[in-house]
Image (tube, rainbow, N blue to C red):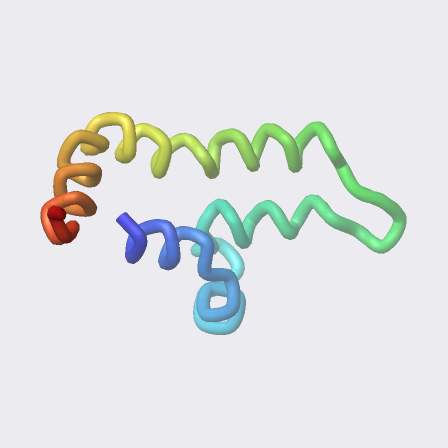
Length: 76
């Protein structure tokens, strides 16, 4: 889960290594900022769409994530 969130939010590598049409959603959100202002409606909508996949994955696999976190806990 941590690796997925880290790679999902990573912005440096996609900005440098991707083309104009092949950017992930978090990096594509930067296109709505301009020198004259920002299109806040589009930024808000894109942010919500960007947050949906990690939230859905966590809701579906939450039981296994919690089990994995508590599996190595010290009892005592």
